[in-house]
Amino acid sequence: MKKILLAALMAGVATTAFASDLPTRKAPPAPAPVYVAPAFSWTGFYIGVNGGGAFANGGRDFGNPNGGEVGGTVGYNYQLGQIVLGVEGDWDWAGINKNGVNAVGPYKNNVDDIVTARARVGYAIDRTLLFVTGGYAGADEQIKFPGLASNSTWRNGGVVGGGVEYAFTNNISAKVEYLYAPFGNEQTLLGEKSDLNLSLVRAGVNYKF
View 1 (tube, rainbow, N blue to C red):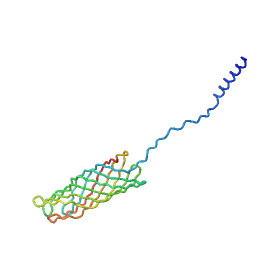
View 2 (cartoon, rainbow, N blue to C red):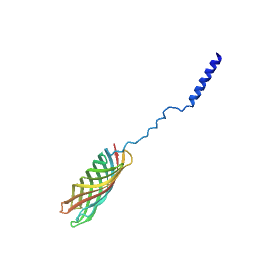
View 3 (cartoon, rainbow, N blue to C red):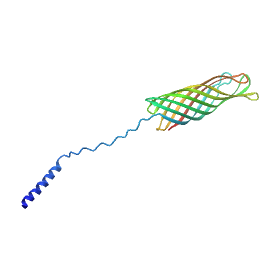
């Protein structure tokens, strides 16, 4: 009897050892998931700051004022594929001036404020946006003949331009743009004419919500 039990025990040990040598049928572990960042989108509201240089043609009577500008921006973009449609408005304080002498006498020609309200159409290459823009522009022009008369006029006109914007993060982008705003002739109290045409070259930083 003991011999039979011993033989059965040895057979069980041998079977277990043989089974351990067989190749495993367990499935290989699943590969770790690969993180794919969501595609960047220009869609959203944004606010920003901008600043740069402004150059004006004041016509024959008032020369060419020039100076700087700085202000704020607000806008909204909506992206459809690679096309980006948007609206943008800004207000800039400007120090655009020209002191000179014309047929009337010494004068000071200053542009103190510039406002634009524009549509934008852009083409997105991932985080780079190439755009054209156009709409309304307004400017506060003050012409003074010291000791004789002063003339302050809010000038209304159009504006066109274009630029490029790059998104460094999902929220922060920077842009450079050129805008041209022709305002046409405006006659002063003393009969002189200001043919104001503004060229604005500026950079800006925007924060998208």
